[in-house]
Amino acid sequence: MSKPKPKKWDDVPFETWKYEKQTEMKHKIFSYYLPLWLRIVGRYEKRLNYIDGFGGLGAYHTEEDIKEEKYISNNFGSPIISIQKILELKEDKKIESCKVVIIDESGKYIDNIKQILEHKGVSPDFVSYESGDFDTIINKMLDSFDEDKKELAPTFFLLDPFGMKGIKLETLKRIMNYPKTEILLNFMYNSLQRWINHPDEKIKTMYDGYFGSDIWRRIINKKTQGNEDELVKFFCDTCKEFSPYVYPFKFKFPTKNQTYYYLIHLSQHWKGCAIMKDAVAANNEGVMEYSGGKRSLWNSVPIYKRFDRCDRCYAGKELNLNNCGECFKVILPKQLNYKEIMKELIDATPFQEKDIKTILQNLEKEGSLKVIPGLTRKGKRRGGFKVGDVVCFK
Image (cartoon, one colour):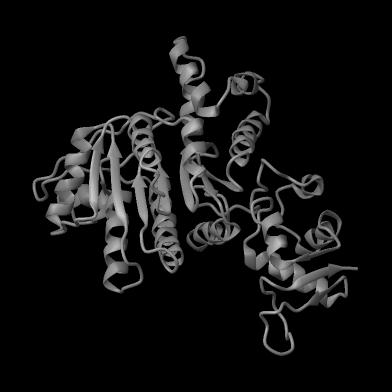
């Protein structure tokens, strides 16, 4: 994916990019999730970090701006969104502190972000900037923590590059080895498709670093109908070796039935995966896949860990929760607690947590399972599921 041409304006001191629909959706999801992550983790941790690995230009324009010949839409990117959300949470005393690091290889983009903040009258003292290669910068940063034997505060990483340059699997692994870290990664599938046949071997070597091996080459060269699924499956499977929960959200082009990219979420807690699903669903008509504003009939089954029975139902139809309940009885152990169910299913099915609860409730009503209330409940259980509840399949 090539970088778009910035547009200058007479009424504001910063430049903007054209605001594409899939970018708008990405920002809605990010705006929903980041404050929740900060608030939840901030209940237990005084120090938090947010690192924007590829900050970009920081602002976007619409057709309305072009028509009016003024920048009036005020659409801002992840660096500005994150700073605004953190300021709001600190003012409301929902979090104590959060350091922000904005990285971009372009010093001009960093300057543009600073100009946006200055124009908005915001000068937060918790923000620092780094210009250069993300992989080099972040590894130096982590080296300093390791050398000083410091503990990295819980950190959320947004890695949203143009193409796949600057991302290495070993660095993702290193990040996720620290406790309470999360990554939201833009896996730029369309860029990969455009560059795979380039004769320069350096480009393929770069992709070797991204995938952690050259196995991707054999997958992409198969030229089969399912090689996209297999490629993303391979990448997510590899990430699962160091991240307990990995979930890919497909984004298509707004105007054609073709994959643009995947947002891949890496988390160390099942609740993080559950809330990220909620963030996507809340902004996308309940669907786990962005189809350019056209509602999909099917919430895509995660391609990296499909249960065998899922393939039988994968026929472009609405999910049948009754059929899924039958599968639950087959694939899950006869007895386990609610938290264990979520840990097993949350990144292996296309469901939100509320959907899994609905399936379990239906099974309970039909007598296919019973629930032993957890110790945290007060009095008799009257319905619903809590973390300590034990589910027994009959």
